[in-house]
Length: 115
Image (cartoon, rainbow, N blue to C red; front, side):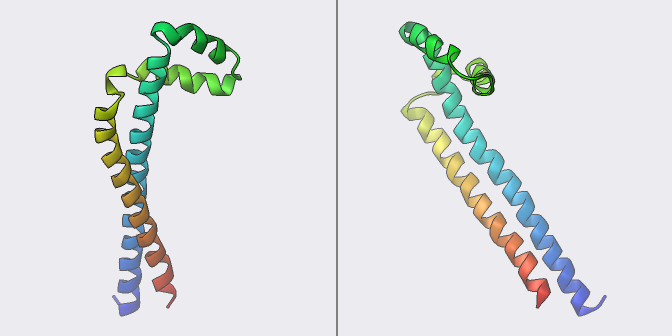
């Protein structure tokens, strides 16, 4: 192997590592966001606010309705509140951090082989 091909191999591995970090960061960020929002929708579909929410929900267009139905099905009210923020906020921060690191690694992997 020449020095150039070894460097290209390292840069390709760096880009691949960046891609995996991006994917994992996106999964963590989405999980943190959706878990909290799903709990909110589940809360609104029960109790006193149920009638008001049903009127607003029925007036939504179809492509807005089906994700909310899924969120209501899988969201749990016990995940809502200050304690939930203590669990979801760190997940969101780590997800965002991994996304940024992944972008940096991919950028380095793309820029340096051109030199």
